[in-house]
Structure formats: structure tokens, C-alpha cells
Length: 254
Image (cartoon, rainbow, N blue to C red):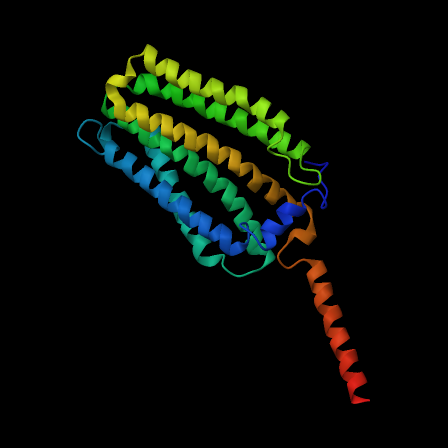
């Protein structure tokens, strides 16, 4: 991303100052992922405290995961409540938060799936599969981000043919692994978890692809002062407008 210039990212600048990535827009997004993440973690906690699993039988690692979840939920809520003023500090906090909590929300789905797989005694199968899909998701994100950066000069060219071809193979490979593994292991006997797992994987990949824009936006906010909500250019324009108004008043008085 060291090759990106302010002119290359003009569309991102618009989104940060007037579009979806304004401070109110990011706060709304964080509220949405908070609700979705709360639902998935709540469902997993319900399964974890059920009769078949039980909170006491969970390892210390799982307990730590849930304690970290509580801390992250608290941080998410505090950011939504207190980062509402339109200033540069809040903007920087929010662009970091949108990346962090997108990752969190994308991964929280698999906590619920793993807890249900524990409940139905198929955890040993789903655990390595979940890790594999998480890794594939990150690979897809790296490919998309790399091609987005290469094609971002001028008009956004994320949807160009080269990007589609490079992205098509890992996505098809992901679904081939999912469907093939489900058939080979006869997991359609448990249709609920199989269906939820496939849907969660699609959502996971989609969120990581969409997050590429957030990563570039965060880079621009920290790299280019003009991308800030209260940029030096805006202050200079404001001062110039003030001076012009004073000059007009003096002329009118004469």
C-alpha cells in the first residue's frame, strides 16, 4: 500500500467524508455487527451450558475465549457510545474498530458451530475443517486486497476480469472442499449443522472481502491528513472564507 497516493484513493476519501465510512456510518455498522455477534456468541453459550456439553467440562482455553468475548463486547459498546463527535481522534479509533470487529464477527459464527458440534459429538471432524476454512478465507482476502491495490489507480477496478479470475479458484476450491467433505463423511445426516456451516462460510468470505475497503480506508486515514474529517485543507478553506467575508464587509462599509 506504500504506492497508493491521495489521487488513487479519491473514492475512499468520499466514503470517509460523505459516504458509508463517515463517523455516523461506522457507528451504525458497529452496532449491526454487535447485534449479529451477540446473537452467534449467545447461541454458542447456550449450547456450551447445555446438558450435553456443560460449562464445567469446557477446557480453560474455551473459558478464556468467552472471557475475551465479554471484554470485546464491552469495548464495542463503549466505542459506539462515546465516539460520536466528529473529530479526527474518533475517526481513527473507529477505522481501527471496524476492522477489529469485522474479524471478530466473522469468526464468532464458528464458535457457535463448534459448540453445536460438541453437543452432537462431531467436534473432532468440524474443528480441523473450521481451521482450514478460516485459513482459506484469509488467503482469499489477501488476493482481493492485493488486486484491489493494484487496480485502484483512477477508478476502482476491483471487479476487473483479472481479479475475478484470481478470486474464482480459491472460492470454488472452498466450496468444493465443503461439499466434498460433507458428502464423504455423510454429514447430511445432521442437516442443520451442515447447512449453518455452509451459510456461515459464505458470510465469512463475504465479510473478509468487504473488509478490504476498511483496511484501505484505515491506511488512508493514518497516511494522508486530507482524509481526516477535520483535515488541514478544510481548516484552511474555513479561514480563507472568513477572510473573504471580512474583506466584503469592509468594501460594503466604504
